[in-house]
Length: 168
Image (tube, rainbow, N blue to C red; front, side, top):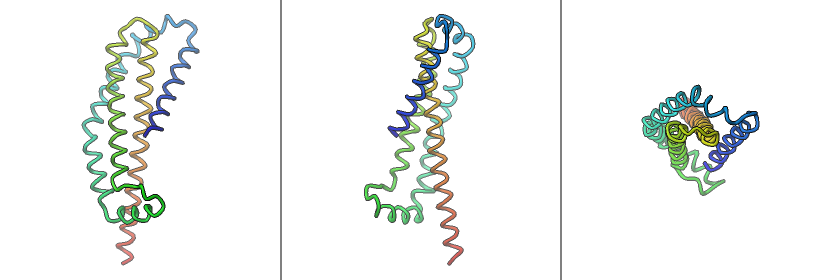
């Protein structure tokens, strides 16, 4: 998870640096931001944060029940523990839960920043809001990729269980 957060910080920092160096006159940023961007960012991140918050428990519980509590997964974990004994049964679910929490928090923080810091008529405030928004987007992408990987594993285990059942 630390790598995903650090990569998100890096992406947000690069984006803000590009804005800083690409805009010839930084004094035009606050006006453009207030008229064209701030409202959409507020609504978008509030919606994403709220949606993920409402689905977090469902996603985590369903994955736990349908993937990590299955015998196929437990058998696979027993094999993998021979290579890495530190693996835990619910480690992937815990990591996903933590990543979802950081993603939800960053989306809500990005939304709140649009109506607090974003109201300041200062290019530094705008760049800070842009940083928070890009960070939240990067975290969202990281979460989506992790969920996709977990779902792919789930489908792989289901396929393996089906193949084992039909082979018998």
